[in-house]
Image 1 (cartoon, rainbow over the protein chains, first blue to last red):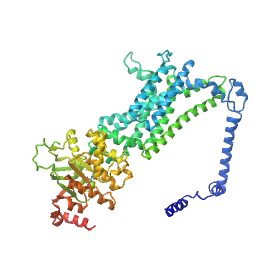
Image 2 (tube, helix red, strand yellow):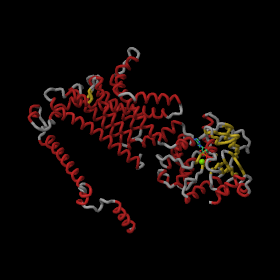
Image 3 (cartoon, each protein chain N blue to C red):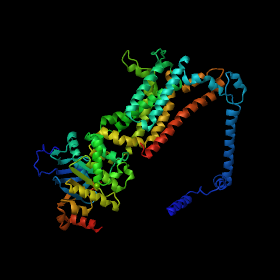
Image 4 (cartoon, helix red, strand yellow):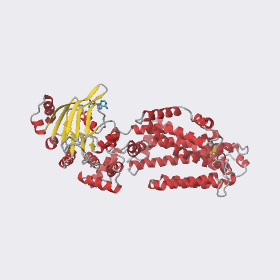
Length: 368
Length: 255
Ligand SMILES: Nc1ncnc2c1ncn2[C@@H]1O[C@H](COP(=O)(O)OP(=O)(O)O)[C@@H](O)[C@H]1O
Ligand SMILES: [Mg+2]
């Protein structure tokens, strides 16, 4: 035993050059090994120092944190974080009636709890998730629309801000992922008709800018509806974004499908599994695991594409901020406001990628 | 199961190929192959690489489609008829060179999937059945592991157990030991010998001539898509009729 473990240690030491290196050695080897490298190190250090000093000076030391008087901000040399405190409600909630903002706060709590609970593997069972989502959807619907339980009715044209971003994003993924899977399967299906439809659909929509698809969904699509039938603008645009998302995601998933060896299909066939049994139990679970990083990538992109609701005059968190910053008193501090929006996006985007990395680990360890 | 309804004579072949031909484009892989296998019979197929052995047995459960001739399994003809294909496949288990286990499922799940989905067994019953066959192939203790955590020999035995869980009447083996390290070949062959002793109808593509000698009722030699020679092992190894068979046996037995 002892011999074995000391051998292991020896081997580790031999393979790991950092293990026995002192700090001075490391610096010398990696930062100052030649004149040229030394120069580069010094320049980089100077730039970094300058940058961090600016962040500290502007963002913290001379910043104004709370005031309702824009002149105080104007007098200061630092950042005006007070603009966020002052304007956070229209930025976060858009045009939604001011007195009803508590409904949106409640909605976001319900939404986040539902999502977080659903992402935990131990809750992955439909008998729990389906009722959970039904309850969440109904209560979010009641809170957002109102019109019942003494809540004032708020049409979708007044929705906005972060809740709108969340709803659009969720709608895009929930509707887009199944469509993506179907398109990817269709592209490789044994039926020529299914193949043809999928190829045309994917290639046509992938080749067009998102804004064009949304324009069609908003302005052209209603012309094809029979008279008297109306589909909510917000729903139309969600479907537009979702379909665009699905076309890209379908190609990602197709890549995963192609990585599945033929032997898997043959083994399934020799167990006389049907096409759908083979697809749902054998092929898709493996394909989706393989392309999970790329799937995550497109999901994060979809989160940011929600800003396109501006074209139907709705204000998600980004456009709501742009609108709020038209206020002449506070206009000067738009940088701070946008930094705040960026932080919100970064928070959710980073949370998504952390979660995706976690899922990859679970997959690697065979937990899911 | 359906034996009582079968109108076949008792000694009629359970598998029967008449004049089966197949082409890949211009290239003819199978040339008018005839083969009869009776219930409980063990047939070993050998021949040089590329001679069409895999293609032949894959036609029997329709992993490949033959273009000429007729294939019958238990009196059912293999045609485009999906119902027939399904009925035939339910009677045939197949073991592949590369195991083709489902890597995302545990050993136990690999075994219960077929019975639960196609035979509508309850989970508990399917698991009992799976454990029964895992004991048969002597690896019940690996039930909760994933295939890639097992050795090649163990994986192949899991694959055999997976096929047996469908309780087929016929088992096809396509070079089941070719992908294995030498020290693992024996454990798989032992499993197959036990299966043969239990009376299973088997068609085995293999170059393990020791296995052919002890287990086979008939040894078939294929070359260039043709069935060159078919004989009981004593005759096949002791006194091969065809020149090509002799050359092949010389080459393979030298190793
Ligand atoms: N899908 C295919 N397309 C074209 N040729 C093939 C295909 N599969 C097999 N072949 C050819 O058919 C011949 C027989 O293949 P196979 O049955 O696998 O031979 P064996 O199993 O005896 O080695 C080989 O020459 C092989 O190259
Ligand atoms: Mg072969």
